[in-house]
Length: 343
Ligand SMILES: *Cc1c(COP(=O)(O)O)cnc(C)c1O
Image 1 (cartoon, protein in one colour):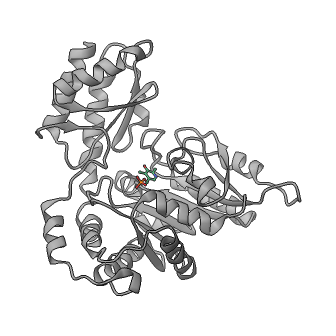
Image 2 (tube, helix red, strand yellow; image 1 turned 90 degrees about the horizontal axis):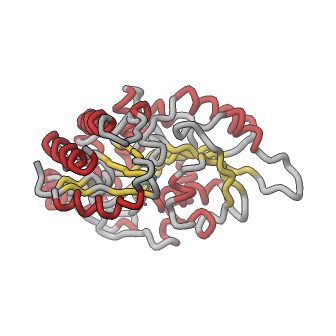
């Protein structure tokens, strides 16, 4: 058990002792000058892991997604994504500001878009219409509950993208979780996409960092854009060293996060008034509502905190996330705390 059981997000994880050692030992250079051996190694390893020719280490998932979408769309062109997508809702309007794209959202089921519906939304070529430049998928889908977008759906959407010559992007901030939960190899998940963004700083414990992968040509242009956005870093091998630990040592253990989220969800679902759809608890995120009691949520936050449990509510839903820095005892403590509030 930890001093505080923090279920707010899988970004709260601290770098592991192995990461701190890797930072101390990292061979360093200057990445903007192209001579950062540890960053170069992380980029090569991630490209290889995801089966793409090239990779770019960036400070955040937001920058990674925005560079990718800007590579595919610009000047008011359109991106099709799911209604709850992070790129659309949680990147502070960057799609309009940085990628200068507009959004055509699709209401999915559990974060999964219907390919037939997506195809209908692709604009015919016409002087009045924005060009549909890119289809963007999120896997796992955060706002839908860390749900997995099935490979078959991803492949059908790829056919749609190909038929209409639109680019195809994956916001794979938690692609690792989809891989671990299904056993589908990372490369298979990535094959259909032109660009894939993955986060090292969520369940994989790195302090900072995401990686964008794609063709050499796209990544070269992306490197230029990263510099324009102020994301060119110097001795960033200190961070990349953690990233290397993330992708080599921290992926398989996500299975434990999934089991703990499941245990937590099953316990919470039994409490009076809790509305929790267990079918959406597929990885490390769970959401639940307690209809009619929203006005008490602020007070509940404090009562949880008194019992050393941190959680988060977004609108009318609570969100709890498991990660490397919560263990079985933290889960038991959280269940006890919720029982004291609702039981
Ligand atoms: C966290 C997250 C991102 C990137 O967020 P940053 O905080 O900018 O690193 C992108 N997509 C999804 C689905 C996320 O959950």
